[in-house]
Image (cartoon, rainbow, N blue to C red; front, side, top):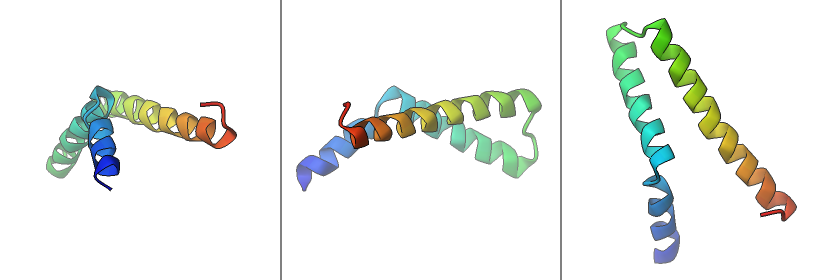
Length: 67
């Protein structure tokens, strides 16, 4: 059980996750203020799509045994 929690925390602290979480917080703050610009929205969308795309690919590889 401790090993699973430790593994999850390690994965959470990787740079990709930190950038995604930080950008999500910034996006939420800007959205609440009504100050989300088009440039920020474009960058945020690309980063989120990349993050979830890589997660989906990793999950698919584990499912087929290619990982």
